[in-house]
Every structure is written in C-alpha cells, then in structure tokens.
Length: 157
Image (tube, rainbow, N blue to C red; front, side, top):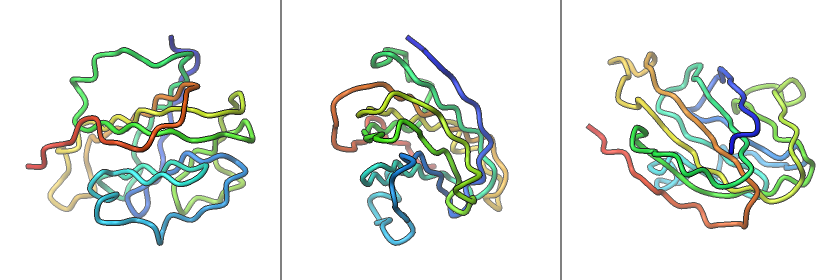
C-alpha cells in the first residue's frame, strides 16, 4: 500500500539522476559500463543511479510503499529492480551535477529497501534528443537485498 508519494523535476545532466543514502560517498561518473548504460541502471553501495534517455529536466515520481507493489506494470517500457541500504534514514534525490547540500531529501526508516524503477514514454524524444515526454518512477519498500536485474527491457526502435 502506498504510504508517501513525491514528485520532482530533476535535471538529468549526463542522462542520470541519483537516489542516494545521505551518508553514501560515491561518484558514478567513472563506473558506467556498456551493460549498465543499456540497462539504464547503476547500483553501488548506498546509491541507485537511474539512467535517462535525455540530459534535460525529467519528471520523477518516488513512492514509498509498506510492501512490494502488485500493480500492473504493462504500461511501462522498461523496468529494473534493485535494492539499497539507507543507513541515515534520508534519501537524497538529485541530478548528478546538483549541489548536494541543496538536493531534495526524503526521510524514511533506516534499513534495506527494494526498488522498482519504471521508465515510460522513452520513444517520445525529439530528433535532437533534448525534448520528450519520458517519465521515471521509483517505488521503494522495505525488503531483502537483491541483485540488480532488468524485469522488462525496452524495445528500441
């Protein structure tokens, strides 16, 4: 069941944004691989880096649930699942070039969280790749750690 919902417009410079434990110390710029780029996901201790299809302001919804959601995810083009530990009880939501102290924060109970990252309308980009109706949703709930995996892969046109 949905407990909390947050809506953001995040500047996805370098085609990415972070959900990061406030205590985590990580810079993803050197860790992207060909596979993580294809998966639109990079997971490191305390950080989920979500890849986007354009380097502009993108709409991001973050939902905190009390258990794993059972929604029908058929409308989403790409879906990833992973986990992260939030030892501080605060999740920082930011674009990679955002000034960290000013970034949005979401207070949660400290502990391990599972995440489903949903990617929608990825094929609505303009010819120059800067405009589009792409959207991103991250659903978090308390749960055991899992290895990152793609649950549904987008079919690129």
